[in-house]
Structure formats: structure tokens, C-alpha cells
Length: 269
Image (cartoon, rainbow, N blue to C red; front, side, top):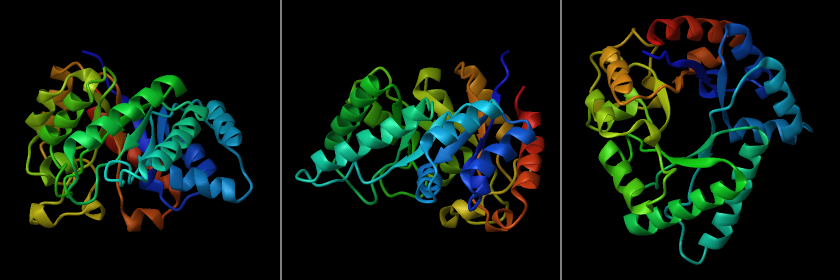
């Protein structure tokens, strides 16, 4: 059986400049780093460049599975869509310049027309075909409408594009009312990346937010089942540790990355 590959989501090091995120991830032994546009934008505002980030990634031997994230596209008013589409195209180009395989495209806030959103998703995928990076439609467990694998599969089916994919995440699977078994409804090709985290025991699931995530193994989720379902569908990509904890953001990012790599190691085989 193939092992999964270790990745760190830069949300775990939020507040750390992007070049230090790269150094910390590489020193800890990660092979990939999911980047956020907030951090690459901040680097450019300080006078840096995407080329500088790309060189730092190459020197560190890190791949970039995703850039995070595209928002506001699904629910944009029809008159605003051309400008929104152009803005998304620029983001896709930035991701391609950094060697990213995917850009995560977030769901709408509130309710939106599924068919319209799916057609827009197809447009983004077609843009990605030309640019060289694929948008992945992410469902989020605390959203009203697109909170489950079922809802993501509806968008994927309506988009009707071979590179349409989503993101799986233990937090969002359970927070949206589903289970680890929902992973088995996807094909390996429909999984852009697999995120990894745990949820604290004794908390009402319906109230949990990103900041409540804990280290894998410190919570109550059946992560072994999650790993088994990924294996069953033939997923052999990145397993990306993703936390959103302010207590970690206040610590030395090199130490946090080291702990993250240690916590991820048992789940890779």
C-alpha cells in the first residue's frame, strides 16, 4: 500500500512571514506546504515577489499542493461575474507562478443557486486548463448549504469537467453532519488534497469552529477510519495537517512545525 505524503497547511503557522513558513516546514521534514494568498500578498506588500517565494520553495525542496482561497465567486451577482472571473484568473496565474497544483475555491456564504455556481466552477476549471492550475471546490462543515460530500458532488457533477475535485477534511466531514465513510463516495481523482486534524471530545459538534481543532490523536475522531477510506479509494496524495489555533500562532513557528511533523508521521503509512 502506498504511503501518503507529509504536507503542512500554513494556517498552522498563521502570522509567520511566508519565507519563514517555508523554512520551518522544510526544516521539520515536510515535503509540501499549502500557502494562503493572505501571506503571499503580505510578502508582496513588503516589497517581495512571487519569484522570491518560488525560489525559496525550490531551494527548500517543497511542493505547493494548493493556494488558499478563492471566495465570493459562487454567489457573485451576474453583472459582477466578469470582473470576479478576471480576479479569479489572476489568482490562478499567481498560483501557477508558485508551482501550485490546485487553488481551493470556497463555497458561498449563505444560499446560492447550485446550477449557476456549478457553471461558474466549470468556467474556472477551463481557465485553469489554460493557466496550468486546477480550482478545487471545497465544502465547509459550518456553512449553510455546501457542508457535505453530497453537496460537493452535486457541484462536481453539474460542472461536468474531468478535473473537478473537492477537499476532504475530518473536521468538515463531521461538522457538516457526515462521517469518515463519506470519503468512500469520492474517487481518488476527485480529492484534490486530504486535510488532517482532530476534534476535542465533549463539545457539541454543531458549535465547533476552526479554532477548536486539535492535534491528531488528541481528540475524538476516528482518524484511522479516515485513513482507511482514503486508502480504499486509491488516494495517494498529500496528507496536510491543518490547525487554526491562536496558542500555536504565538509560539516559535519552527517548533510548531516540528511538532506537526511528528504528529503526522504515524498516519502516513
